[in-house]
Image 1: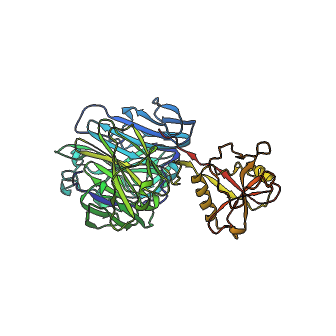
Image 2: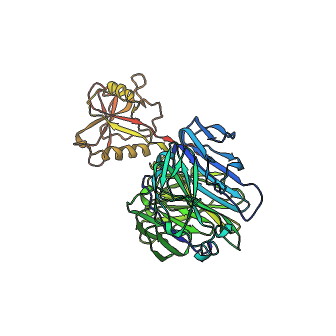
Image 3: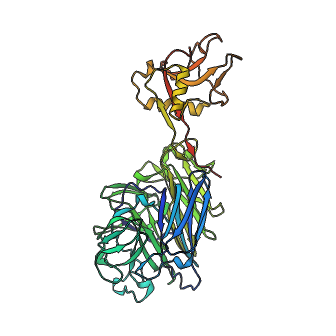
Length: 533
C-alpha cells in the first residue's frame, strides 16, 4: 500500500465500547461527492447473532422502511431513501432507528459516485452523554491554510458535529449551533442537530442530559486531484482513563501527527512495523479520504464481522498475539498468511485481501483477543472502520455469541441426583466427548481454584450400560476418547458411573465409581456459536 499522510487525533472515549445491542440510531450526512448530481446510495448493514432475530428499521417522517427476520450469522442490507440524507438544515428528524429483538451489529455505508464512507455504530445503551470536540484534521485546500476556511465554498467549509438524539428529550450544551446561537440545544427523541466546528471549539466538552450519538464530519473534504468527498466518523463518549494503543503499519504508513483534544501537535513516524503508545482515550487515524477509529487494547475482541463494498478494493487488517497468531480463523478456515511483528509488543499484524470474497467475512480467534479493521479503496480515496466486534470470549469451537457455562456444585450428590440438579439449573452433567473439550474442561476446573482439588471427586455424565456393558455419554454423543486412570474402568460388576479425578500428579483422568456414592457434579452448558458460511 502506498505511503500516506496520516493524522492521529486523540479523542476521549469510554473503554466500555460494545458494538452489539438491540437499539441503534443512524444518520446519513450530506454527500456532495465529486460534485456529482446522482442520488446517493445510503445503506444499513445488519448482522444477527442469533436465530429468529426480527430487525425493524423505522423513521419518524412516515417514510416506509422495512422489517426482516434473520438467522444467526445472517447479514442483510437495508436501503435508505435518499430523502433521509441530511442537508444544511439545522434541526431535523432525518434519523433512522434500527431495533432488533435480539442483539445485532449495525454498520452504515454512504456512497455517491466514488465518494464512499463506512462506519460502525454503537448501540444506544453504549452512547454517551458527554463528548469532547476533536482536533480539526489538517487537509490541504480544505482546512489548510486556516485563513481560507469559509462556509461559502463547500470544500473549504468547516467540519461539523452531527448530534443525533436517542429515545429521550435532551438538552445539549457546549457546541452552540449552525445558526451561531450558542445556547443549549434542545432535542426531541430522534432529532438531529448539526454544528459548525471552529478551531476555538477544539477540546470543548459537549454535554447532554440524555444519551446521544456524535459524528464528526465534512460534507466534501479535498481528497485527491482537487476532488472532494464525504468524510466522517462516529465519536466516542468522554472518559479520562488512559488506554493502550497498538497501531499496525497496515493501517497506513508515512508521517503521522498526534493531536490531543487538550492541545498540542506532535509529529511522529509510523514505521513499517507499527507503533505502541498510551493516551487518555481512543485515537482516530486520518488518511486520504477516511477517519479511522483505532481499537484500544482494552477493547480487543475474539470475533469480528467484516463487510465489503461492491466494485472497490477491500481488505482487512488483523492484529493478534504473536504466540497465538496461528489460532486466527477466517470463517471456517485457518488464516494462512504472512505476519509482521509490531515493534516492542507481543502482537503481529497481516493484511487479508477481501475483494473477491462474499459480502461478509468473519474472523475469530481460538484462544486470545485480537483487533480487526476493514479498509477499502476506490479511485485513490480510502475508507474503512473498525470491524463489528461480535464477541470477547475466545473459544476453540468458533465465534461465541453466548459463552459456555461450567459450574462445579458445592453439594456432594449421587450420580442420579447430580443429573437432576444440573438440569434444574438448565445445564447437563458434563460429557467430555473429545480430547479437545476434555483438555479445555480440565483447565477450566483447575482455574476455579477449588480447595483440595486433588482430593475432590467430580461426577461427569459417563455411564456403563447394564445391558451391554459398554460405556456411554448421557448426552448421546459417541464415546470416541477415554482417559481412564490405571486400574479403571474395572469389570462390569464394579462401579458403573464415571468421575473426573485430579489425584494423579501426572494429570487428571477418569475413574469408575458406585453411582450411589457422593461426589460434586460438574454441570455444563455448551456455548452458542455464530453460524458461519
